[in-house]
Image (cartoon, rainbow, N blue to C red; front, side, top):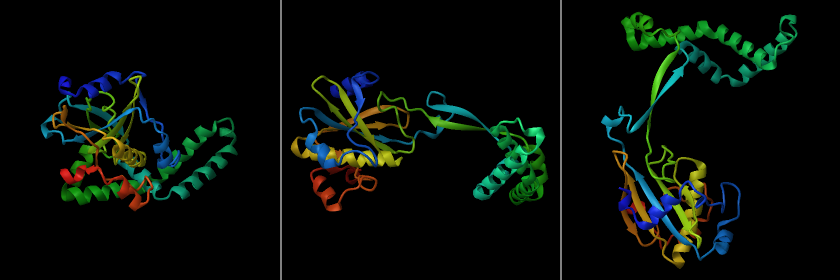
Length: 288
């Protein structure tokens, strides 16, 4: 399928994992020079282009297929222990104070004078948890009675709320060529910003909505590439990661297309200035 990719994208993926592909280091969230300064200094001899990847939902019947999904076994504490932890989550300041007080008490006990601080802290936490077990048991019992009603005792014995639990987490595989395989699963789309210099070294950054850093990069590099696009068209390549985990090339646009979602917010810019910079850019969301 990679044979269907444009030559530039093939060259990019071949450079991935080597010193021929590097991260942009032009700015970063909360630090770094402003957009205007970067735009004025950036090397205009480089080739600039963008790649937009849209994610389709995976087919429901593939979630148990190891070719498409990584299944992870997760060990969890018992329901009663979880209820104790939930109790203390809502009383964090009180919990820390009680732990510190108990540690000081243990330090004055000859039996524990040679114990390490970490061991004393673990003992203090365990003691406090044990004090809360009766309350936790009652709360879990109330949940069982509410869920199972008259049959709650049968499920109490069957599931054993005192027993550690095992759950399975399912993680979709991202079998894309580098650098696209470093996918944040919170994103339904990601937009990549690339340049290639005279020595055929590629540089890139990626934007999305999954984190504050991604939103900042999307805003910063989106506006930077929009400014560059006003001087010379910046091509945009469209890919889809489809419902069967195939990375499929869709089309190429000869100028810059951007997903305008989250272009501003984490990246701080005057609204009118943003509109001016983006005037010649196609909003992908308007063409969906």
